[in-house]
Image 1: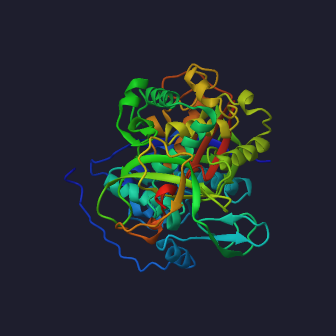
Image 2: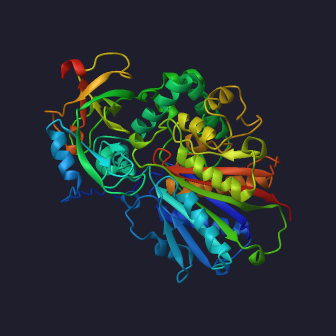
Image 3: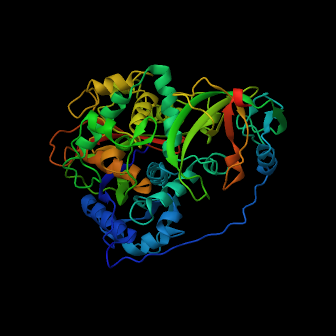
Length: 390
Length: 144
């Protein structure tokens, strides 16, 4: 089986860009930096995959050809991929498929979102209310935070998960973002700070929530036979899985758990030959739109047993110096959440972590996991990346 | 805001068909719980599905008694879609008697600290709404 290589990538910083810049500027920055990181020229790219979540946010329908024009890639095949918060991960999978099918040798996968500085926050909340079963739940008033809150409330009732344990996720991820030049919200805070922040929707305080961010990210994938000779460690994608669950949270038998993610992970682990994820994964970038969602994700991914992720988090197992570092970038909570870009930014981060060139760290890892989802864990994409020596 | 930024206000008016949800919404406005039942697997859904999400078979409409138990709650201050005022709202998931799923809606007339386990009745609402789905309002059974 062909295992696509990641030749390089980059991120246009996540944040609330009120500087008059346009998402095209962020796309061009991320795309050109990704090509430079990969050691390729525009002419080397065979095809492009574009991810963005909502045209309500960007004011651009059919963004693919626009991205091509911005990158000097006009005329190339382009596919736009959308799956809510999973968009970037699904775009990565689409790029993989094109390479594995022999349809392209080198694919630029690029994602963006104008989710923060463009619309007023209340309008962004209204748009994201359409991310679920819009006609039934969204129109009834469901927002992202209210549905995630209902889901984690059942987790708390079942396992005794506490607000303090969830707050420890916020402390970890905001701290991990400190020093990350791509991060929207690097902060050094305490559990008390989280618990003292304004309540948004019980049990979630403001500092339990990630931010909607502007930003872009890009990676260059290649068939091993279409890759230039490597001069540094690269990474290859050895596993990919997608899973789904009922669109309505209320329809699920296990509303406290992310079953779609469990399905996606099982498929990715099978493809990568992983038997015991908690043992075999060295580092992970995990979807954490809310603190409790990181706990639910860890359990769905099999990185902790059901009900055991929260105490393990509080004990430091998933801290940067812990047994399995999770969200060294800061995750959505610290680095930010630009849905079309998030899954791709995770791939960039993981590629650099595996290559021993992430930020100022010389530490390298052998095998990493990246994970994004849309809805309340409704549609999930999980990928396994492994280090390749030059 | 940067001087390189334009303020654009976009108002979109939709003539939005309700499709097969129309019947459910009309019943909801009367405080009636119009569910659907799969003729093959027997699973019963409220809100309804025209076809069973489990097996794709057509469902038939069934009316439930309208009673249920709150399985989770969250309290927030927000604005319902297409309405004008923020409000303090308790959103709940309610396991309705006779249904296999849970229904999302608002809980009103509840003054306790935690609604989980509370028996409630689907009531509809006389308050302002912006969409008929907002008639998914529950009240404690003692008010029913």
